Amino acid sequence: MTLSKAYRQILIILGLSSVTFLMLFFGFARDNRDLIFLAFVFSFCLTVAIVTATLDFRKNEKIRKQLEYMTKSIVSHQPVAPLFIRPGNPYKQIADQLTELQSRQQDESKTIKNSNTELVTILSSLPVGIMVIDSSQDVIFANHKMASMLQRNIMNQPHSYSQDIRNYQLLSLIERVFEDHESQQTEIRSVGDHSSTWDTSVVYNQLENDYHISVIMYDILDIINVKQMQIDFLRNASHELKTPVTAISGFAKTLLGGAMDDRKTLVEFLKIIDQQSTQLTSLIQDVLTISHIQNGTPHHSQALELKKFVDAKLTGYSSMAKVHDITLVDEVPQDAVVSVDSQMLTRILQNLVSNAIKYNRSGGSVTVKYSANDSFWQLHVVDTGIGIAQKDISRLFERFYRADDSRTKQKVSGTGLGLAIVKELVDSIGGVIHVKSQRGVGSTFTVEFPINDESQTAQVDK
Image (cartoon, rainbow, N blue to C red; front, side, top):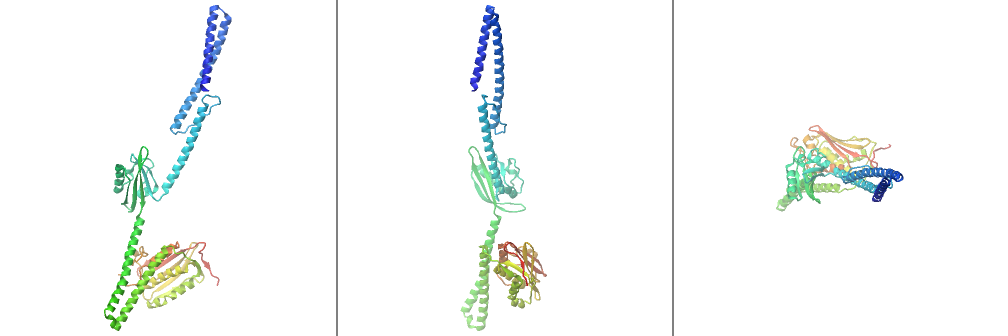
């Protein structure tokens, strides 16, 4: 289409030029005015044809330059306005194809951009620190978690990774990957205001004509702490088990060695063996209780008249309170009704009341109170005992932890798991336990039980 129109214009110009030249030649040669007039007519037609061809050429040249600019823009992935050409123009098909190509390229670019945005969003929200470093050792991506771990504001523009990383061990690990082109993995301990331990992988990624490395860090301080707690638990449990077992074994051997012939010694030793057996049974039962709670033992809530429930539980501790000269007081309102697992509440109340009696002073009191609002209801166990030092409160719910009793000289028996069990039970229902205490004044343990659609406080009609 392009060549045919140009050829036609050239042929017309050549034909008109030839005819005009011949007419002028023969007109002047023969002095024929008619031929000379016709020659001028054809000259005018020739001029019109030349002007038309020139205008068409300039117009097509302008379109060609626009197509060239459009092609360069498409190649460089730059946006450009589509080129619309009237039907019949020799460049229309090319312009339409380039316009369609640009449209497809924009759609693909938009898809890639959306995918990249989604990927960046996902990577930014991961609880794992991620940093990507190109072969020029410039950071090209880092998520928010990585910035938090490194305690730095990481720029979005490419920059040297050494601007963000100050940990010598991490810097050495990255440099080793750049030198060896092999992935590395190790645990790195941070230094600073908030020490932590990171499980760090520096991954070498080979691309088609280049490479980059990815730094992936995961904070494993909580995992390490849990492992340490497990080790401490096993060590403390072994120690607590060893004491009664050793006592039982020692006294049994003594009796078998001949001491059983003495009636008084026999009775005394058997009492000690019985006490140690009871202590051993309690310890094993408490360990099993913690295990059952952590395994997700289901709770079965039921409506309880809280005052009657508390009265019944305090009655069970009347003998123990009498021995220690402690007054038990139930200040729960008569109309308080709660929906709760009775077995769970029994264990919580027993542990708190038992401790309040054991760590009380002669002539003191233990008071159980109740309060509620729209979100939770509270059970308060208040004692007038020896109190807890502030340094011990933060560790009060650790397994086998015992506060220093050297100031009071008060020795209290127990497995050391009571408050740990209470904390596990409260956590299992999404509750919270608070402690307020002052040495020589007393302690208040407050347990908050959440209220939901299936657990509501109510008033009992009397």
